[in-house]
Image (tube, rainbow, N blue to C red; front, side, top):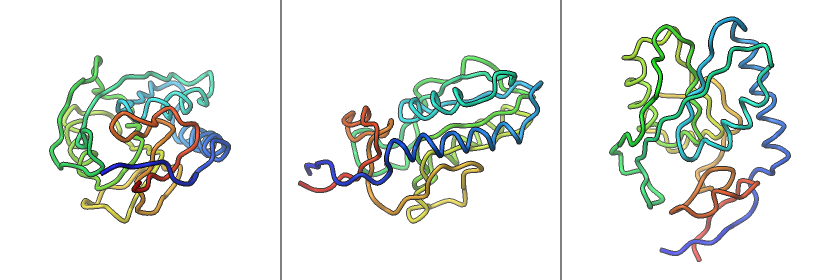
Length: 178
């Protein structure tokens, strides 16, 4: 099936405004002296993570690490099979951790990832998502911090892609059948 770009669902200005608000909320919830480890889920969350941590106060002990997990491949639907391609470089034991995800869709990948990370004994584990697509949820997982809830549409831009295309877009757009 071939796809093309549809309408803008969330503009770059609204994204920036909301990312700033969520960063302030996170900063208010954590002690400045304790390390706060942001775990970006590659590749989709890279844009969001970058903008989010740039909005954190200078006096916070912010650390960044990455994981690469996938359940979509080149499809527009989750396979339900989660693969870890890149793991954390540092221990998260006894640290406050925020998993930064581009989108929470079915929740299958994130549920698997949350269980894996909790087994590593962080002091706390929170989830921060750019987008929450609740209509497709198959688990009871929900983000602790979320920028936007969206309808059941396939979206790209600001890090989200379809078969490695459109990740670079500054706005979040729908994708429609050609």
